[in-house]
Structures are given as structure tokens and as C-alpha cells.
Length: 135
Ligand code: AMP
Ligand code: ZN
Image 1 (cartoon, rainbow, N blue to C red):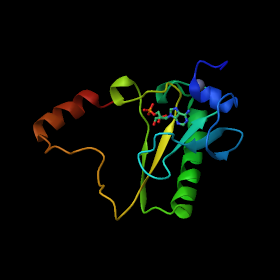
Image 2 (image 1 turned 180 degrees about the vertical axis):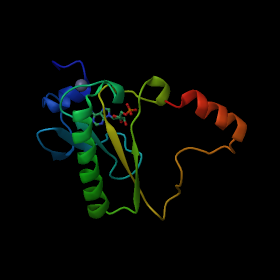
Image 3 (image 1 turned 60 degrees about the vertical axis):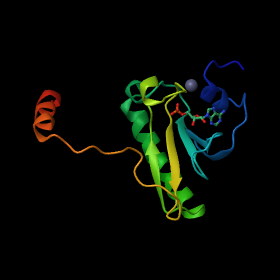
Image 4 (image 1 turned 90 degrees about the vertical axis):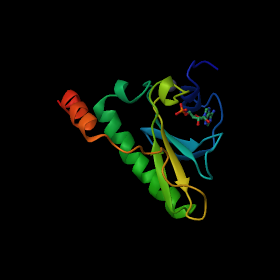
């Protein structure tokens, strides 16, 4: 494999993938360790490590493709809903440092619901945090 990045190697055809969509900007293929049936990844063909490293123009193009691929998977699979996941950094569970959007199909008859567990908000703490973060 010439590319150190496994997703760049997929783009270059150095390793195989279960491709579902390709155009000049992106490649979409099935995740080899799917969370659910039809779990797919959409990646830009040009390498960037994550959301913060990607030029805004590229990001806009990629997100429109995420919408297109998600709509196709939802209609064709079919599924009842889907989650879009986009992990940044090891702390967030990112294992491949090439920007990718997960499309995770969800099914009404399966156990599911929210990905994260909500905690009752402390209004004073939320107010203070919003003041610190506002820009
Ligand atoms: P993340 O944890 O957000 O970095 O997601 C990386 C994803 O890439 C994981 O869900 C892996 O199962 C998936 N993955 C890693 N290598 C491949 C590959 N060669 N083909 C398809 N999916 C892959
Ligand atoms: Zn890459």
C-alpha cells in the first residue's frame, strides 16, 4: 500500500471497498464493521484529517453528497431513519484520520433511540457555559 492513510488507499484503488457511490469529489462505501445494516461512509477524495482541517468549500461539497447518499440508502434499503456521525480525535472515537461521515441506518422495529444518554441540565451551569462559549 503506497498510501499511509487507509482511506486514501481506497480512493487510489490500492485496497478494495464495497463502493456504493462515487463522483469527482467523494467516495461512499460500506463500513467493514457495520453498526447496522447499510452502514456507509462518505469521504472526500482529497485527504484531510477531520472537520477542522477541511476547507469550507470542500466541506460544503461533501455534505451535499452525504445528503444524497443518505437519501438513496433510506429509500433503497429501506430504513426508517439514520444517524450521521462524524468523529474528530481519538477521544471522540476517531480511528481513521481521514474525514468521513458515517451514515448509520436505523430501523423502527430494532432497539434504538438516541445515541447518547441525556442528563438533566443545570440551568445556572448552562448559562455560565454559554457565556464562556459565546462568540
Ligand atoms: P471512526 O471511528 O469514526 O474513525 O470510523 C472509522 C470507520 O472506518 C470504522 O467504523 C471502521 O469499521 C471503518 N473502516 C476501517 N477500515 C475500513 C475499510 N478498509 N473499509 C471500510 N471501512 C473501514
Ligand atoms: Zn487519507
